Amino acid sequence: MYLARSLRRRTQRSEFCGADSWSGGDGPKRRASEAFRGARSLRRGTPRPALDVHLPVAAESLLARLDALLDDHDPFAIHDDDAGNDAAAPGHRHPPVSLERRVYFFSTGSRDAARWAIDGALGADGARATPIDIADDGWAARSHAGLRAVRVGDLIVAPPWDAPAPVAGSPTVVIIEPSMGFGTGHHASTRLCLRALQRFRDRLRTGRRMLDLGAGSGVLAIAAALLGARSATAVDRDPDALANARDNVRRNGVDDRVRLVEGDLESLRLEAGDVVTANLTGAFFLRHAAALLRLVEAGGLLLAGGITVGEEPAVRAALEPRAGVRERAVEEEWVGLVLERPAHGVCPPPET
Image (tube, rainbow, N blue to C red; front, side, top):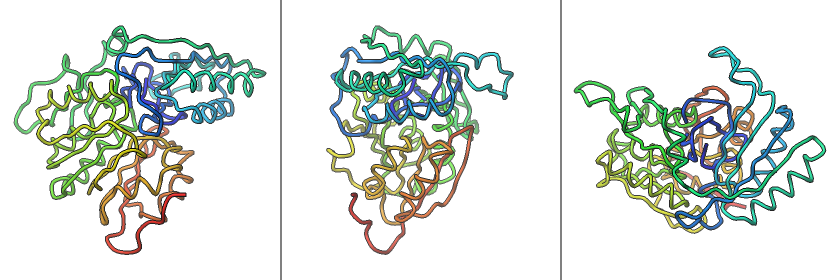
């Protein structure tokens, strides 16, 4: 599952909400992550309003329409089960035959509005949307029971039960207890961000502050601290994700350098960072490009993830008037961009 980071985004068969947190393996595609956008947070432990969505044919055109509809209704997290993928040979994923998607929302109002929108726009195509309420009875943890360590460059991201013992000269281990926050290292978008952090570790070590927007499990802020960042601030609006992130911060021994903040882009007053990670969604970047870049120091870097190849042109058009692309990397259908704000020049125009 994934922490809503806009729809057509990341999907993993078992990664839970979680921002990669959303995975037991890099399955299909799609994740959502508007966890950092407006709207109120759920109280911790509150049952999650959700929709079970069925598409009889998972054609790209139908998926795109479904994603666009959902993206207008504040999804919290998404879990896809793409029928037909399991028969594909390793490395040769077949297009899904049908789609079973569970979508989590921050409110029953958003859930019900999304249901009506799906019924009205896609009902004639055979789409069904069934409302449900999901209590957290430990299902998120159970869904990750088979998770194993994954190596990403000079880092190993591992659950506690598969974490290797630290050895001098070996890769740095980031221990992440999978729970309600996206970020186990098994999703391509998270791996792209982790690799970018490693390539720019000198910036982390010399900068004053790192920001992680839409932190999920806290994996990016924790990795930044382990790579040498003096101070990291991890922001998410979901209290369950932040509780998981707090445990992960302590587990990795970086609670003296990583600060956790609950809130969203509109309500918080954050100091700008020298390095800012935003593993969100294409839709989020389009809506909030100016606000995001105002959180990047002049001369600082924005590491942008959660962008599909198809979304990249529009996202770049929104960001590049205010920042130049330093690097571009692609894994599967996901794009990671490293953008640099000019050290001098006119301040970015206000967001419209």
